[in-house]
Each structure stands twice: as structure tokens, then as C-alpha cells.
Image (cartoon, rainbow over all chains, first blue to last red):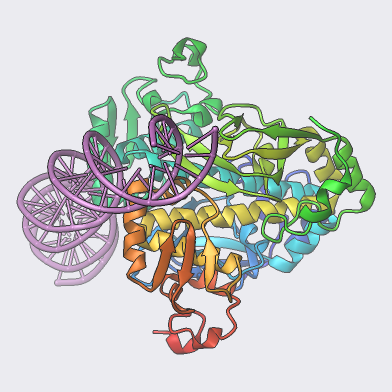
Length: 258
Length: 258
DNA sequence: CGGTTCCTTGACGCATATCAATCTGTGTGG
DNA sequence: CCACACAGATTGATATGCGTCAAGGAACCG
């Protein structure tokens, strides 16, 4: 546990949960109030932070490190829901469910995490509409991702799921670069995509044949539209590739309709 | 389209979205304001209300009828996300995503639906913390269901998914009755559970061997704990069976640990 | 009745999980 | 600097569970 100051956020506040910040638009005093009631904790890799069934007593803000949320059954099978890194938050939704945590939270690398007490968050939500609206945006964002995960597992093949994930990473890491990296271990990504590491690996071999170079966790596209075959309306909307109109597969490009 | 009065809600306000109401705790004037800005619409069965890619312009409140939300791909494959009936709402989350709708909404029977303009909802959320908190509760509730759906498809067998769904329905329709009904057509439930109607049907044959009678859409349990084998921590928490402590499988019953 | 929609049952093939072996990279200690 | 250990990733062989396709039955409604 360590002293919490606003300094910690000097860098992190810029990139928070893919553009959506818990603290966005809050006045200075409110923000300081949050920090004063929070505590900082360090975790080793592979530590359990929250177990299914635990009472959710904090909202977690990842200052630095890697964390995943997942569900497990008695047999030890696991379904990875989210993988988080710097600036992401978790348990924001669970706090408002009013039930024991339906998910596990586990560090996947050394991590420094801010614990914000759940009660403080709930009270603030009742007093501060800006904060309530920030939470609403974050939760709906997670919900959207959950919907995509559901439809991926229900109606997409493993190769399509991997391609879709790649496309998302590609856009997130800079749509105009031909290179991006896998930010997590392959086995964890595989679990997130609802397949075994073996199937993930075999899907990679397929993808390689489609103009995509894969060396360890480094991916290089041989041409700008190599992944566009995996695009859908959701992701097309967030696509920021410069010459988007030339895309042969873009679902929002009129010329590709029907 | 028809005149909207508070009369419509005299009955419905009691049962709204499984205990969580959009209008809960709102003062009379706010509630009336919502209704004054809303319009009432009637739909036949199998009409499209919203398509993937549409701009979400309303929040929908099901006065009467049945509706489903689902995602589809170009090939016509579908993943059913939610099935709604009287008192349920949809698009509450999508409105706050700030993107084209990631889901389709379709009536599955004749329905009367209240359209509440998205802009009005968004403005109200910024002015009224009670309303914002109601929305937050509803969205987190949907998110929880989405998480369960993900883990069901990732780590449960078809039979387990059906059993889990049955258990949920059993509790929802009165935990102390031995009888309950399937509130939707089997093909739709199958899609919601990520399987084909054929597999759903074969799963039913399995379930019948486990002390559960199935006649058309009527289910009868031969003993009170027949479905407990499918229980988990999530659902155990909402279990209201009288002699719960006697349950041989209850995961929150200490004697069953390990 | 006859027609339609929904559900069930059967036969079959394929895709993905499983199990097992090998390979690759990385860090550690001699 | 090499040898070794270990984790992660890949590859291969096999089996099986679910989807697919096709036919038959059941319930509902005119």
C-alpha cells in the first residue's frame, strides 16, 4: 500500500479504457476526494485479486500491469471475459449488480492497482451525474464487447474470431501502421476467443496464408486491407484507415452493398 | 401510434425487467415528462424494429408482447442475445454506446411498444441521478446475463446450458412450484443458448431422464431439487426455495464444499 | 379435414477438443 | 559461454460431439 497522489495519473489519465475515462470531466475536488479514499496495491503475476462469490468491495484501476477477468466452473474450465492493461478499470459493473462477484480477477503480470472503495463509488454515483454518466459509458462499452464475444462464439469460426480480434488490435494500435503486437499471451487470447491454444495456433497458420506475417507476438500486414475480410459494421464504424473508401470489403462503403 | 397515459403502467410498473424498473423512484413530474415525449406503437409478429447499423433513436419499453434482440452476419446466421416480454426494455445500453446499433430488434409476437426518444433519455440521465442509477442497474443486469451467456457457450455442454436455463426459469416463475413454462418458442431459446433446435431437442431428451417431465412448453419437476445439479454460485444467490439448506448440491451450502 | 408451423428423430460428416510429442525461446547456473 | 530447465507454442494423431440434411410426427388454425 502506498500514498496516492494525482501524480500517478499525469500520464495515465490520457489513455484510460480505450478513450473512456472514469474520471473524465470530474471537477478537481471530486477527483481528489476519490483518491483520498483509495489505496494503492502491488501484485505479483498470477495472483488472485477477486474470486467468484466474493463480495465486491472495490473498483479497480490498473495503474500499471496486466489483469484478466474470467469465469470458472468446478472442473477448472475457464472463460476469459476481459484482458486489462494500464488505464483500464474493472468491477465497475459488478458493484452495481448487488450480488456476489460473478467473475474472477487475476493479475497476469506484476501490477500496481488502485483500489477505490465500492461504497464511495456508489455514493458518488448518486451525487455526481457526470460520474454516473462516465460509469454508464464504461459499462455499456463492456456490454458491447460482451455482445461481440457472444456472437463470435455462436456464429464465427475460430479463424474468423482470430481475424476479428487481429483487426480490432490493428485499429487500436494505429490503423495506418502495418505492424501491431499481441498484448497478451496466446493462451489467454485463445481463452478469450473461446478456443483452445492448439486451435488458436492452427488458426494462426491459416491466417498466415492470407497475407499476414506472424513472428512470435509481432504481426505485420502485407497490405493495408489484409484484415478487412474480417470486418463488420461494428468495427467499420471505428475504422480510421486513411484511404478507407478504397477498401474492397468495407461494409459501410456503399459500393460493396449486395 | 396512440395517446400515452400513465394508465398504461398501472399494471406494468409492478413487474418491470425482473424487479428493476426504469421508472423506479422517479418523481411524478419526471415520469409524466417521459410519457409526454414518448409515442406508442403496435407491431405484428416478426417485424423488424431495429436493424444492425441503424442509429439508435429510441429506448423501447414493451407494454405487451414479445421481442428478441440478436446479432446476425451476412450468411444469415443469428445469435439471440435477449428475449423480452411485458415490462422489459431494450436499447437502453446501445443509446449510450455512441455507435450504430450492434443488434437487431424484432417482434416475435404482436406487441405494443412505447418509444422513448434517445435524446430525451440522454438528457434526463444528465439531470436526474435517480434515472441515471436506474439505467446503470438495468445495464449491469444485462451485462451479468451476457457474462453468463459467454461462459455457458465457452465451458458448458448443451445439456448443461439447457438445465441452467431451466433452473433460471424455475426460480423466476416461483421457486416453490414444481411447474413452470417455457415463455418462448424452442427454436428461439435454442438460439439464445448457442445451439441448433435439433441439439436443443436432443438435450431435452437427456433432461427428461433426470427427473424432469416435459410436455410441449410445460415443465414439471419430479422433486424439488431435480435441477439443482445445474446450479452455480450466481444462481444459488437468487434461489428462494424454502428448504434450501437441504439441497444436496447448493454451492453456498457449507456442507457441500469440496 | 388439409395446410402450415413447430418440434423431434435419424443418419452422416466434419470441425474442434483432447492427448501426446516436439520445437522454440528465454532465463539461470555452472 | 554453454548446458540445462522450463514455459509457451506448435504440430500430429485420434475421437467425439455437434451441426447439417432429410424425413417424419405433432399441434394448431383455418
